[in-house]
Length: 366
Picture (cartoon, rainbow, N blue to C red):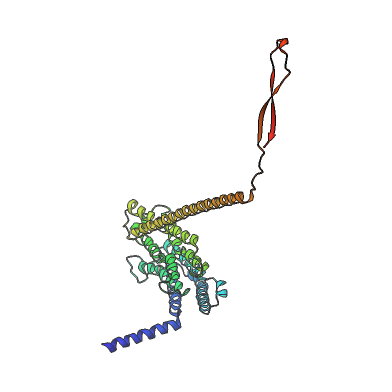
């Protein structure tokens, strides 16, 4: 038993070492393979069920494939320079993954819209392997392509702050893409599709297109921050979360409510996903606003205390200046006034006039 465990440990270590040497090569190969598979399946629906002229999409597929390969190679070069400590050159290199993702899904969205508009799949009476289920699976491959493409663009260690930052931005992308596939389910049943109001079909296709293109925003954010090497851009993070609510979950929830209550179409379990993610996003915005208010309150208190301390310092400084710089005033002479009686003109008794005395003040300085 001990020897078996030892051999398993050796095999595991050898596998890890091999994966470390080849690094992201398997992820890159899977990303390219899945893209080729998705593009080929969608092209088959266009060419086989609509018109052979849609073979011109092969040119667009080839162009997108070149862009995908270039973005993967460019990302691998960028990571090599990071590991070789050429950080100055690495800061000048931005990931091109968002460009390839945008091109992939613009091309795929155009194909999806054409296929849905022309009902380009076999009827239920004529079952075939390339039916609605394979078509939905081809669309859902976008979620796998996104995961493998993201893996080729960074080497953030598991459990690190960088990995957490990347997961916060891209954690819901896979579920949003699967949600998009589910919202298209109404087109694959003829009875349900006939119940759609005028314009509702275009609205659902627009939602699906936006849901597939929206992951470009977190990829741009990660590219600007070098996948967490630089300080995270909070405004871009909250912009992405707001867009996820306004572009993906809220429209999908409203559409499902219309289909369920207005047209009596079967409900989808992804309705709960929409409600939960909307609630989580609203709570995060509440927490963010609460933190900002608390920070502003603390800053105002600190500024008030600082101003109060500065006033106290100024008062103490002025008091010390008054005590040390003012000289004692010179002594003011005291003035004393004494009244001295001086005799006026004395009149003789014969004249029968009274004596008059005058008080003359005498001023002396003490």
